[in-house]
Image (cartoon, rainbow, N blue to C red; front, side):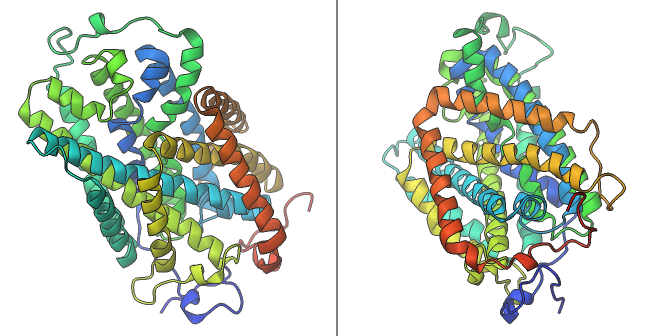
Length: 468
């Protein structure tokens, strides 16, 4: 049986010495990244329309698309070089230090767990909406929420290969549903189905509305950075991570353009900005029953794929922190048969369920967005420091992203603009999230740090960093 090496803390239990399986390829990485994000094309992005109008949402789509292109480029280089579970957490551990690593790990877990809760809520709400059309308006959505999380947790418990193979199939089907809808509305015949000339208006709230739209513009792409969590389980990190991540980003740019074009041509911005399931509504407005069925299935598949990927990523981050003793070492166990971080998978289930039942959907989404945004801010700093400590040629890299340091600088500026956009609509939530992470940092410094073995943190076979 394969054993882990430098990444296993000395004295760990025998179950913790079992390594995660290296069974994934570029298609699985694509399925993980796109699977988490694609639900944002079916819903959530449209709240940016309510902030800045249809044109404001389109501008936000392109600006945030640039932000995430920078994220994908930076992640592809660092993760293909630091190929270990935990993604950005492991990067922070090697490049900056323990306190940053703890915070980044927490950002990841909270972002994915909140997103998982939101996805499960969407499944329940959609089932209730469909049941209402057949005269069952009193259907309780909560059993569907619990069932969704439980079934996907079981998949993740049993094995990563099966989990991400399923994700590939349902993500591809959901993407195909958007493409079918696009061709179903005859985009080559303007005015026949799509009414852009009648529905598109100038910016209703001016440029301040465009800035406010940046917050929900993140929903077009939020989660693509999750491909990093597969780094320890891919057969070739130098090939699979860059190829899966960059192809995933291209897929999402196409899907985002299709989504905006179709929805903005079928619904006035006042309705689109507050719709719960805008793409399903778009299919209904076409009057085509087959399109309506296809988009219902696509919406369900997108939410399930997102929740599935979120469970995978949150558990890897939590597992990695346990393995390094940033959390109790009990969480760092690998299942002896399925080779999965099963304790981390099981532990996070009730947390997702509680947030799904107790928190409003917009607050859950905002918490996820802000946690992700904090992680992106770290990436820009991390990339500059990584290149400075280990310049090109000093270590072997799986991928080298171009134009450095421009992507890192641009990412930091766009993050700043998005913080301001979030403050405009959810200032209290922003302050609450920042307070939460400050309190968590204090807990780590005064209580948990003493358990961390500093000598075991650096696991890569690299020379000493420049200036060490």
